Image 1 (spheres, rainbow, N blue to C red):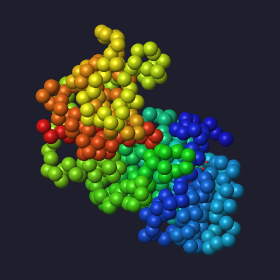
Image 2 (image 1 turned 60 degrees about the horizontal axis):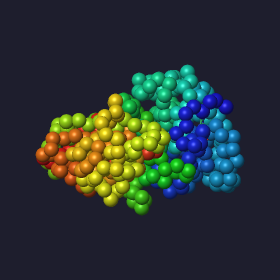
Image 3 (image 1 turned 45 degrees about the vertical axis):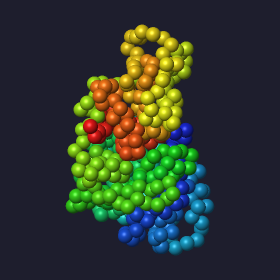
Image 4 (image 1 turned 180 degrees about the horizontal axis):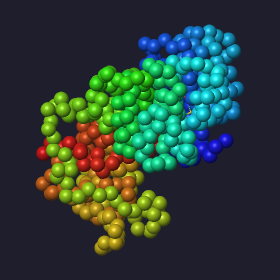
Length: 412
Ligand SMILES: C[S@@+](CC[C@H](N)C(=O)[O-])C[C@H]1O[C@@H](n2cnc3c(N)ncnc32)[C@H](O)[C@@H]1O
């Protein structure tokens, strides 16, 4: 077996199986389509394929997984009898020779489902060909460092016949991160992306990774908009938003565009934080240095949710006086915002007293004195929190970029 590369979670093959209701939701989104042959790369426990078998009677299913244990699991999951045909291949789905292997057994494939492993595989020469053939070769953020999800997506598109449809689960990095902007541009230009549905955390077993269902057809699009939605924790779908393709390149997520469109409906031509900040910096001490040192360093764990929006006395973090070379220190009047973490949108406070050193998980915002109360209030009110949450991204812990924070809209 090849070197699996960098893991994002504890499992080296990224075996975080889709929960059954999410599998059914994915298939429901492909419902106006009656396929005859379905491909499932990285089939795992078979939850996507079994939802497809349930929906489309008479379908022929071709599953592929590198894990030797999968074949027996799939037989158990699908049961022996039924109005479907199943074949399984134990193989590396990222081999550039996979098409030869598959097309020796079947001719055309008119639909595919996929939940790729959340890993960053060790780069191999064959990946370049997979990306090249599907138009994504110029989209890799750093050569040799690409999420498996992008490779699985490309491999599916390579294998599908023209006009075929793919329902795929993509990690939040591909949906929202700036480093994958170019990828989104190519995807939206070269293929028909029908919709993207953001899933709640807890949609997969063994991880609370953030991901979205994306439905894509081969063949270039004549559409100028894409449908975005979101599955709430209670499992209801938000009504769809229609978003211009050009806007969707920035991010393919519902929350971001819901906030953006809300701002423009209110006719707000807002000032942005970037237009009034004197300085926006992140702290400089890593959380491990902070834990190891004997000087108290202010970290996101010190930003309890009850302090959100308050001016706080942080005198207990100010036992050392003076400056330390290159170490960022806050001062009274500064506003602190969490940069990473699950509840980062609820971790915003002002420094009333004290001058704490900051970990690199905290932003220090300095604005002219006459703006301070308004900026703190607007960052921490319900709309401010919703805005911050919509800009935060991350497959695991959420994070907020400085570039995004500088675009926070303000009523001055
Ligand atoms: C996130 S799980 C998804 C499983 C299943 N499709 C589901 O939705 O529950 C990813 C699957 O990809 C498989 N996998 C990982 N690397 C692979 C590779 N290079 N080739 C084929 N399968 C791979 C894992 O064994 C695992 O079953």
